[in-house]
Amino acid sequence: MRNAARFARLILGLLCLIVLFCNLEQAVCGVIYVDNRLGNNTLNGISPKIVDGQNGPVKTITRAIQYAKQGDKIILANNETPYFESLSLSGKRFSGLGKEKFTILGNGAIISGAIKIPPNGWRQSGNGLWKVTPFRKGFFNLYHNGKRLPEYRPAENQAVKLEKILPGNWAVHRGAIYYRALKNQLPPTESFTLAGKSVGLSLIDIDGLQISDLTFEKFRMDGINVHDRCKNIVLENVTCTENGRCGLSVNGTSQVKVIDSKLINNRIYDLLITEQAVADLRKTELSKKASVSE
Image (cartoon, rainbow, N blue to C red; front, side):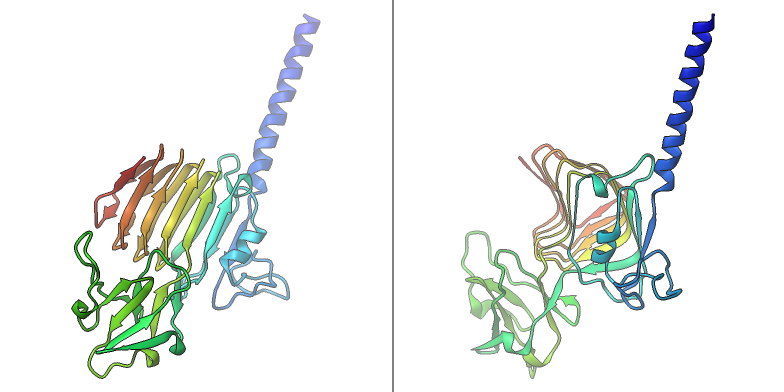
């Protein structure tokens, strides 16, 4: 009987330690605030407003990621100005902790990969054609005043014929973008941008992540690339649009749940699934059929 009582007390003690440990797991999860208008990367990110010399929002998501630890939440201010950043999360540090997922809450903000074309980036090619040669090749998109311009693309296996590019349209030819200007238009004096940064958000080896209320647009490759070995990934009210290759790419053995989201108007694919990956779409809009490739 005495041994049984001791055993029962030991079990009870162990259970108390487990409960305490679980509570500690929840307690250490923090919140980091980001504000691309009022924030400053010398601040600690623990407050949505600047309180004193140290307490206040950081300016970039990249800085918030540097501060972040497992199970944390990053909250973005939406100032109607995009965050021009490219993000990468990898490993346990950016995974969930206990019941808490590592979270990025966008509040309707936009993360953009657009890069402005400088005036000296244009070269005249005659007959109203202007040429710009991006440093990185492979996938392209061209925008004017923030709006994607229509692209001339010949039929499959047909060569691009520059004379067929209509005014206000563009085409890719031999690694360069050719744009035919509108009447009296001078591209070097106007606001043209390229899909320049490679990927909006890249994930690898993550377990427990939620992205909510956020748009990824105008990236050269993908809005979001879930590279491999990711699980318990939730994208809710996320938009991936106007990216040069794909809106959302899910690869390897990754598993992603996409809820109330939009994967629309991306240049090649809206959703690309490769290898053994799984994408569970719920109330999600696509502008073209998902592509599945082994």
